[in-house]
Image (cartoon, rainbow over all chains, first blue to last red; front, side):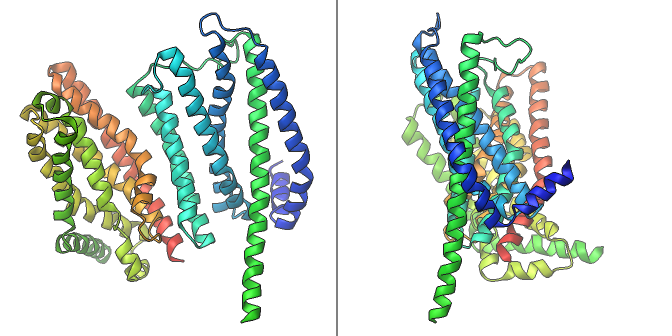
Length: 248
Length: 229
């Protein structure tokens, strides 16, 4: 099993083969993302209004999946960076770099929708509650990671530095999470993770899961497109360099 | 073994001496006082309010002074090529990094913490709270130095990488500030339970420092190696 995985990953270490696979996957992935998103939003529109929160509850169907993607995105960057740094897989850096802004935007979306939900519910746009605060810190971790990529001109050097930051930052995320939780807790406890008997009613749970799946596929689709762009950009760079040396 | 120890001590001592001669130490301590002086202009001169906020403000100002001092931690050595030479020293590069960070702790962080009681007086802090605050800072500061070191090492090849260093290091400061401020706050109340609480917070700070002392030199050395190749 592991051997097979190794063979597959070694096969796609060749960027041309990866580009072949990507161009085949690209269309179906985007189509699936659009379909899931449309169906999910349709379901969300037909969810009964919550007896306490009213229609405000609908924000949750964007907010919660966005928060999931914020965490998923950083985990994705971490695993891509480990693959790049330890197994020297050439696409690891490309994948990590491609995913970073996508994850950051989902994190920002979680923060903004949380704030929009908090205004009618808590009566204020922002509270220094444990989860909001740790997601805000996660957003800064994303920003630092993206800024590091942009600040270093030389691509291989930037890739290594960014990978080190991704790994160190990943260790930091749970530490921040637990210390901030300890610091202040006001938010509702996580209610979907109790898989045995979810506290959410099925009317709410299924649209939420569909939206989660839609966001996941959307994340993968955008990341794949960005990876293709990055590989093309690298090829252009190589070609420009070759052209420059020919002219000289 | 003894040669290695001597090299370690020499790198550490050189860093301390350079910080003094370049005026880095004086600059960092002045920065701390300037920041403290600005606070009453922003918050108003009311002594009661300043007293209530003093421990938290001192923590934040210490963290920021430390961050600004870290910007050039490796950059001068990187630019003049000294860092390349240090790779060849018969000592693991992680140990070299640790020696420089230890030097930084002695040359900059200890003077900054020594200045905290005086800065606290300016904010009308109660004298009884100072020992706990200083103890918490001594326990937590190594973690701050290590986190800042990671930022400084990752941004070493970036010209004017100061803001980048701050952005990278900031998330690592959150836990230290949380428990540092908690220790300072618990020290206010007095009593036996509180002594236990303060001990626990100092323990958490020390644990954060110990963990970062173990892990950060590897990350910093890896980041510097990546910049040097």
